[in-house]
Length: 493
Image (tube, rainbow, N blue to C red; front, top):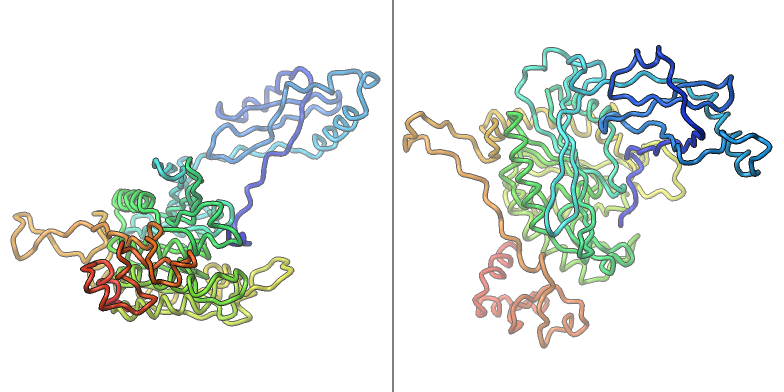
């Protein structure tokens, strides 16, 4: 697995506070001050230490301090306690003395709107499938002033990095919204949990524990169509529900990898994608942090780009952001993907981050990898020049030209539909599911006469007779084999 994103939020666990003995009734004033959704627990440690401890009952309200009535050390006389129980009771006494009751946060739906913090949670759900673990998500609405409340919104998808599945803090989303100066619904999913058959996931790329040896799951994994299809279905449904005028997808590190995958699978859904510090399936890098096997990793990367680039070229706005000194996600790979998209007519652009910016995020790091520019690219004042100044202009231009979506869940070019459905104003086509090349979805069939197959490391062959070899430069062989898949991919080289 790739390194944790140092900018992910931290889910702090509940403070382990053991409250022994029978619980007295809470003070009447405390009961009156809180709604029925709040559980009030009183701990009677000593007569002078009666203090209400609040536990949040709503899943939307965070995690409070939990009590454990099954362990009872404070109910004993101090002379009957063991040394361990005395130490525990002393710790509880100190913690209780420091604990002050905090006001119960209101549910987001009860917030005054627009709220001072600029966001509210509007929906939560889970994407499920037979071949991938659950993938939970939240939807936030964000506005920075009252004039934006009735705007046609953007639908903004945020994909986290390899950080263990932590949510991005909603306040960070509010900062992004302020930069874009538009009402936004943020879709914040979590990469799928492992499946029952042992597959793990980098968003839409599945890999096994064995394939991730030496952290090379991003090389030896394969695209997982069931998750990509379900993800796009949910995005289409939710963006239609909120009446989005444009759909934007962004991600950092592994999240940027996910942006290339998902936009490659269904480009018609998206008005813009913003892969930051991203990478692809496979790599051109020799040596470096991962020491990926070459030339096998380059072949895999070529296959991925040959599938992804012509599809992503259909997305109106593609802005890749990458630091030139980034050793975690190689700059050369991001540069190659952008050039490949441009080669298919796409208007992709690569924004290069300086060495100073690449290490600008706060935090102590033993080794500098040039992979610490999350805030520089997306949140700080520097992000205006890096991203938002150009993104606002490009998004508005795409919308003016008829790209985006207006509550119809379709990202293809918008054409007006008459009440009679005349031939001059044909209905919009539905987004099509793009078939994934076999090389990206399953191991290739071993071919005789190929040195890479003989070594057990070839990912190029899908033909039983081996005539589809790219390693041998057998384009004529591919044509003779009648493989439309290979012929189509070779045509894009």
